[in-house]
Image (tube, rainbow, N blue to C red; front, side):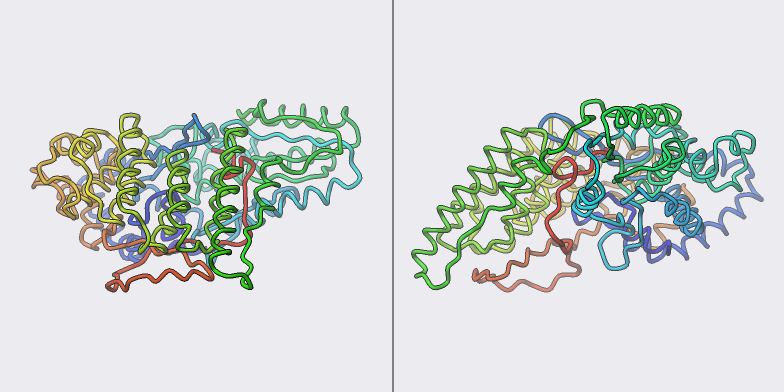
Length: 557
């Protein structure tokens, strides 16, 4: 595992808008690390206590995402100082970590190095492959146990990393950082201001750390039960037994082990079912099997009429199931299926209104719909887009919904839509780092009033200590880009590590990045030529359509 890959592809959460990037940090990391080691040596001679006092721990930037209709989940952006230390520990010891995770025969989410994709590591199997393997394994069993771990990542007790990897008895006697589990525990805690509960969610390091803990639990469970039919995927568990009594025993044993690791099962998602039972929810079957007609032998008028009918029926079906299954990601699944269907010009107005309605109902869809809108840029109704942007910001800004606001601003920037002052002022008054940075970018592009009040931002970044607090990203980027009036004293001039980043021209926000359109086979809309772009954010290539245990995102959040 190369640290450049871990920092470039596995640092920032995938849910951030495209301008947020770690490319320059990753490419220059070796030089940054050397400069810091030289600086640290000098500081050690002139001011021996400063490292432990000033650089001991940091806090993460928080980014709030919707989960279902009413719940939220937070992903986090750790400080580059402490996160790079954690990444270095993982990369330097990747063989030991990988060998340990391979010991679990029931894990299908073991992290593997992802050379070509957009993330540094990915699970060894897809969720669909996991379900298929479970079907195959269950051929001679009558009972299925399904369960998962409740709030897994946020409740991991960091000391259990060493318990799983090196054994509880060993690390109780030996606290040395020469033991890998103890070092990972130490590095994780430093990323979260010394907290022992929870790991930073979002970076690929969270997948790796959580899998270490999970594989440790797997091995204990196998030792207790002797053998297991079934598999685990992240924190989702599908096990198979001959009788209900055996299944109940397996559940009790699993609960006992989780309790020892200071974790608990999700009772709402725990059940023992006797076969025959459905493999999937009905909505998955209905939507995945829906066919859009495209008989090229028919006249274009007839084809357009058929497609119009198919679009109406498809969205009626999707909206019905979204209402019936409010906790599942029905609309996300439906949009991902339909976004590769070439929409005829005659039907764009209808299709555009329906996908925008879906975005209002579930703003997570902005990640999929913005590239789709760019593909049909010549047909897009800017007034509709403007109304959607304002509606999302108006509804979500008062509640601090980071994802919705930041992606609405990204949509506004993509289509050069001005944000009313009353909305931008609410964003600047918030403590929400990601939307504020997006809004500062729009302000610099004259899409937000120049008279907007920036004093709430300036008041929060008056000292260098704030570079290790929750707003470190806002402070660094707003100063680097010159988006704020001159600040005295300038926090970047008094922090040795961030001086090094500044001297290496590191940016975590690249305002030149633009979204790339979706590639839709058979699309005949003519797109006007655009000026060359400094860098283009490419939508991740997709394999077969996937849905997680919750229809969209794994449940470990």
